[in-house]
Length: 207
Image 1 (cartoon, rainbow, N blue to C red):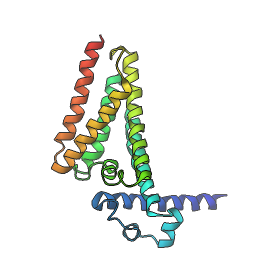
Image 2 (image 1 turned 90 degrees about the vertical axis):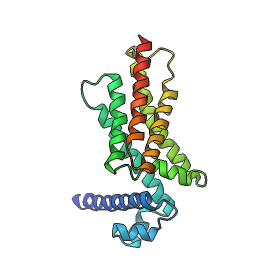
Image 3 (image 1 turned 45 degrees about the vertical axis):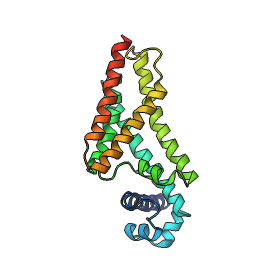
Image 4 (image 1 turned 60 degrees about the horizontal axis):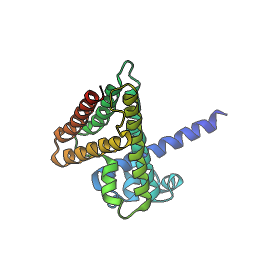
């Protein structure tokens, strides 16, 4: 019984290595200029091993999108696990968690989903749909916390949580893009700070 489990674990490690190196290459070169041979060489796998896990370059790209989205969602959800946070503090922790991921790379990479959206969403329906779903998942997580703020009386009763969550994601992604271009974390930090300042103003209005 233990041998199959070991084989699956090894296969999953190989798959994750391929996706990880593909992500780094797509950060550096973009999707179009990243070749399967580039990924095979960087990951140190055989062509047969690559095609065992991915039938095409597009499938690999989809895996990069899914992995990146899961990583960011995981960071956001871990932020919510901290005990004793007020609803607004939970929003702050989520946004600053995403900010931290970008700052770890000195802002030079930006957001892989934002990068791929700019490059591929006009020409590749599969990429567009998957990236849109990722942003929607992030937005829904933020919206759920905004609903908690509303129930706690920290937001006006008429506040549109889903709409404002979309705005928060848009502001964050815009800040990330400018920080990538300028190699300066200030635009991204400013975007997060301004979103949180608006939450504070809305909280005061809700009283």
